[in-house]
Length: 350
Ligand code: NAD
Ligand code: IPM
Ligand code: MN
Image (cartoon, rainbow, N blue to C red; front, side, top):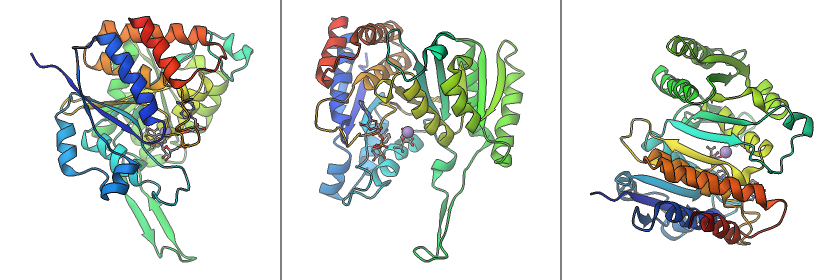
């Protein structure tokens, strides 16, 4: 029988540091013989060495894998050697688009014992546990735009958001389906008071799909108000569905309010299952702490639970989540290294 092959792209900055811990925990949870791993040296150094970000051959090879683990890509903002966006667009977004990873799933919850910036009054409102279903292949991210008269005082720059009925409907449907397995509530976040075209499409599709899910309640927030609610009433959310850019911004905030960016996992799911899905922490390459061995690997490790779920290893996924939860509830404010946290979580699975 076919042993699933997992592509591993450690990437840049803290990417390799957290991915090493994630792979260790994945093996501890699933056993030595469950998966095969295939390593890909892609990222800043590969580009500097070869002038290539991602070759067609490597892309075709990745397409044959059963899943992808990605650490992070990207140079320090302001880097003089790596142009901003080169690796983000040429590698990370390229994989999301080429492998049609339409659902960018980003769960957030406040684990017992976690340190959060939320006030006690907000925490007393109840448990916080929601998921952002971020659209992953459309919106402002498609690179539909350009510049006129670049570098002149009359420069004009455009980034045109693409929203298709097909693309919106599949993620909205995913959100409603997910809500039936959770608390039966979907919140659409958009800005239809200004972005009337895209916002209108998203709203109409939510209303249409909702008729097929009578058990699921749905509501709407403008994105600016949604940022307030994440900070003062996060308990109001169960499943948030939103576009690519709003989802990017909201999930960094969601991470911050639920215990920090070091805890936030994500899955880029090809819902059609014609290509590999990709699992990665929400955070980036964190150049400010790279190489110090202090990055929190928990986000990358929790992403392994999403990978296991996607590949049908429900029990193993649950064990990873339980180990993460136990570790978080006991970690307090003690400072541990990346490897110490990875070892502690892996030890709980031994
Ligand atoms: P970032 O997420 O890398 O870092 C933001 C802040 O969070 C920094 O202070 C960092 O030290 C901290 N942080 C991030 N991960 C952490 C962890 N695991 N443990 C402890 N602290 C952590 O975002 P940024 O600084 O805006 O971006 C840095 C680079 O990463 C840029 O080149 C950006 O394009 C890229 N990026 C890549 C991805 C990705 O590959 N998925 C995601 C976001 C940003
Ligand atoms: C993320 C990142 C990426 C995004 C960047 C690096 C392209 O911020 O995964 O959240 O905007 O999607
Ligand atoms: Mn982001």
